[in-house]
Length: 350
Image (cartoon, rainbow, N blue to C red):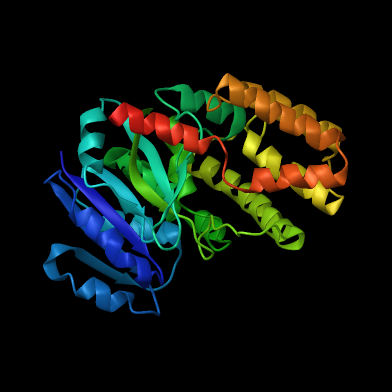
């Protein structure tokens, strides 16, 4: 079975070499490395060219993440494809572990990612912070929530057959309208996958996810209400576009029954900070009731976490603003559960 690692890059010259080196260092020998540059204006081109025939370079005009996925897939020869963001990187045994855990009927395998800062220093956290979706459970979660517990783009490996079915859809004129809004195209194959087959979960840390200020998931070290409200509003708008995009690609007309807990958390945070909701129907009681119900049904949470998150929603509904802001800081930061999860995963490997 051949594997392809497709690195998508836009102006990440300062991180690019580490991503390429990690892909070239894979212990699974039948792995090719493709680097798609999305019209970078920094020194990325020089770095890519310096690797010669060790990689397959693709240079294109700027078109967004989904266009990088489609162009990289056109060049890829692998039976399995991992799309690696240029600011992330992999453990050397990543592809080998995926091959060992791949089963007939799988369309996607996913694993945990160690969180590091801009300099590559580990933050004692992993993503996702919950239990990975596995088998057909992600399909149940998608029908209920329109989401399931999965890592960001770099923590997923897809079957060629699955990508053949959805990536042509991403070249559709309708899909280009979504891409023009910069909603984060890596989420589309993640969310569409359960409708095409089963998901293999590998409970190991097999890569690194970089948190920095220019990243889509970048965080700030201090709590700034106005900045937080802008980010929350932008994420809400992306959520709306993302919902339309994955349903279009997966050919699903039915809308999910309930928002996922993390989305409801963002809506509650915005409501308490701004004094008004992102959605016309948002109010403390409504969001709190939905949040508790969503937390209980969310498969990615342990029972301890279900209780804790439910308590958070109730507290956000009834507590005064000063205390609520303390809960908002917690919600917008890295989960305190992730260090414990990381230690558990490390113990399994050991």
